[in-house]
Length: 358
Image (cartoon, rainbow, N blue to C red; front, side, top):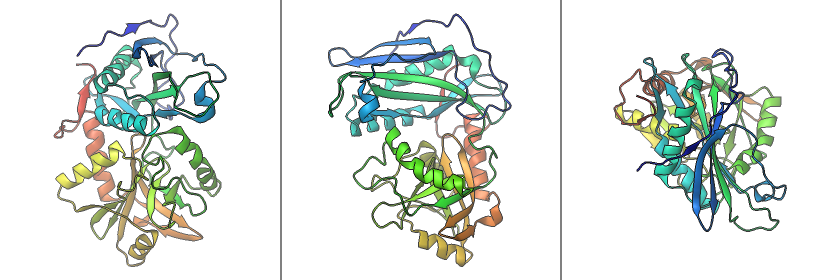
């Protein structure tokens, strides 16, 4: 099904930054996608307009009750100049699941995909060329009713903005140091842990601030009830290789964001013949494996960093050094495979790639 989005081109174009030193989330392209929702028309008036501020009433419900959600995916430029996306349908599926949890109207998946492709096509010159770079795509939905009162909104804006990015971490793929958080929790069963909602990230900032002050890159969150089972890292799902078996916390309690990169890693690992377990994993089990020399490696997964090796865990005064603070073979192999598929260097055996330009 084709969608005919109105396009208003920017009359003044921004100067594009050099690929070197892009960082993450610092620069934004010339255009954005907008679409409105009301109960009479549903989702309507999809359009591409020049990037700029959104006019919102100070009483807009998003400011007061945080009824909003977002997604994150990337567009990649292949060696022959083509632009492609990696599993965008999975991001759209997760976005609609978050919509359900937050009482936001779903968006037709085909419409959402066409909107992403359309705005990337308009700003395709912003997709960087250098290895390791990409165009980050940030779809989001906000409640816009000018009203003070706690109930689901009646009007919304769906927007997509784009940002050329380099590595998420300043040190690239070098192993990161992670601090285990015991005082605060990210979520509990029945909460919004499985949703990609801004409120989850706001609640996690205090743990991240503590980790920053201690010199650690990220915080490792534990379950909110027993405070002993591993949930996820602040911006990533987490995997452990223990005695040759790859283990990652399961999604069954709804505490953990169902990462697209996480799911992709599991599929790739199983295709390679690795034993993969999705289950509860306690800090004590990880410590015991480390003590016995069976903690082979640990790494985080996510759209922003793809694969992020973990070289050290800090837990209440105790440091656990993983794999001599070096990149492990499983993490490296996964990184090479996933980025190879994303940039068109490796055959896409899983049919994950969606073309934007041919």
